[in-house]
Every structure is written in C-alpha cells, then in structure tokens.
Image (cartoon, rainbow, N blue to C red; front, side, top):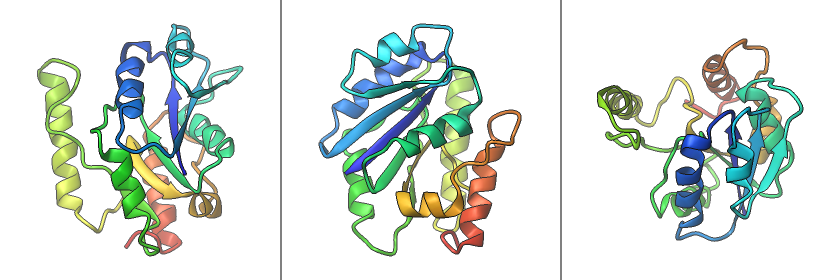
Length: 187
C-alpha cells in the first residue's frame, strides 16, 4: 500500500485540485493523510470532503514537522509525499508503485511539468525551472525535491525523517537529500 502524505497550511486554493487528481488515479491501493499545520483558512473543510484521514495540528510548526507527523500515522510501506499545489497525472501513483517493485529502488522522485496549474508567467517559469533542474540531475541527484517523491518507510525511519530545526521551509529538502546520500540511498 502507498501512503500519500500532504502537508497543508492555508492551502484551500490548491487542495481540491490536488486531491481530485489523486483520487482519480488509475491505482487504488493507497491511503491519503492530510496534515493541517494549523491553517487559518478552510483547508481542513476541503480535505474532509475527500476520503482521507485529516490530522489537525494544534499549532503551526512547519512543513517538516507536518510531513513527519503524517509519516508516523501511515499504514503503508511506501510513503508518497506531495505538496498541496501538486496535480498528478492519472498514472503517477501506479508509476511509484511499479518503481518500488524493484528492491533496489528506495527513493523515487517525480518529474515536474513544464506548465504550472496556476496561471501566469511566474508560475510557469518556476515549473519550467524545476522541470529542467530534474532533467539536469538525472539519476544522480544531489538533493531531494519534496514536492513529489516516494520513499520506503523503513528508509525514512532509518534516516530520522525530516529535520524540523529549519526556521523556514526549503532547508529540510536539501538536508534529507544529504542524509540519503550519507546512508547510501542517493548516489
């Protein structure tokens, strides 16, 4: 089973489209865990309209903590992390599951589209930039982009999850990539 974890903080604007894409997947052996990091908007209400488990944190402690809380609540052997503004293709979850059938695959990262679901020049430029960064990294990434990736739960637990000591988001994704390299999971 895949355990899909989505950290949420004031993301009602994007969350419905994200969850709709997940529940329209061609793969059906998965659970979805939404971890609300004490949103002030209607993110929780949006999440509750879908068949997912919603964890409501009592205070805002950041995306790394929210991801770790979600990982702790999972039932599956493979954790799949998506940011709340990610819209997946119909076969994304089945591709993750297929990748993890290979016992040598411990971590798998999605390719990002060249076009953003948010309209405008800047969102499209950001999407194109991430798309090209992933193409340059190829099979030997130096870090892990946490917007859309999967990891074996036992590997996630072994490396200690996300470091929650960063004051703002972003640092934890570079740090987890370094931890994965240190443990030999990224080349």
